[in-house]
Length: 409
Image 1 (tube, rainbow, N blue to C red):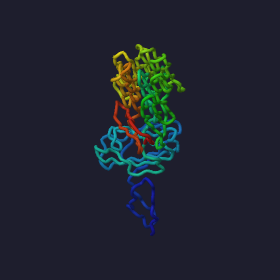
Image 2 (cartoon, helix red, strand yellow):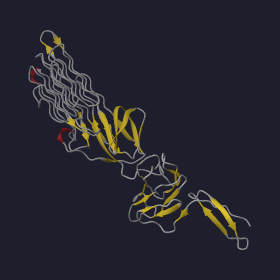
Image 3 (cartoon, rainbow, N blue to C red):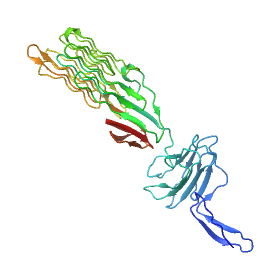
Image 4 (cartoon, one colour):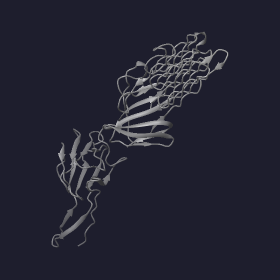
């Protein structure tokens, strides 16, 4: 008699074990014993079995067999075509795809065959059908916290005002720049591209450049007033120059990202505004402090401090918390540069009557920091400089320069 070849996406082999010549009946032995009754609640799988999983009413967790042998297999099929809504989570005391993290079928009509390969890699996908970017993805939402700090403004020369700090947006903690409440985390989608731009700091008396993540834009810090000029506006405002009591720049971005700079009061210029307070808050010339945002873990991580103002009194004023540059006190004391990757404003240069003037410091470059569940992997596109670390159950990726696209998987 002739035998018809049988095929299936998930049964890896079909072996003819007996043929009844009188009736033409064929007995088949397969690598996976598929269970006839669909699963509608959490369950523990048995090696060698396949399961139709019905998530019509609820998400379901499949626990893979404990103490498996190399070569053991388990099959899972999204029976109800609903795993994109109610996911099928796959968990194990052993690794899954070389990771201790749970995985999931989180797309409709998914069908996956898993095979145990040993302690190092654990369970790997042997075959799959209807998969999206990956056969097994992360079992939890892609929720991303962010800190987006723009480049700081440059300080002014000749008893110049301190540069304003770069605007600061964050969803991490309780407070964002300018005293606003922390913003909402972003719910993102795997495989989509998201833009990241790290703004550079401004040169002497120049506004800093914007930083961007997805739909979040932080505005560059305002410039410090130089000579006889007012401070510029921006994410945080620049300080006014000393002469003629020049006024400060405001924090003009909407929503609020920082504070205004301080006014100049001859012979002392105003300090630049920071994300945590206005310029001159801690005294004439003092840059406004930045904001503590511990998105990378630990404590004491300050960003977006204003630059200190210049003077002719011979005294240097140190920069603010959050990378603000120092303010010079005579013609030999230039303003200090803001610290890169903090968005700190540059300090104002000093002056000495009849001798000359010192120049303002450059603003510090900004930074973009993302915090997300460790089950996801980030892909950093060309044009960006970034690194990823782990803090607890999260990954933290810090971008320090450039512009480009990123994606998650």
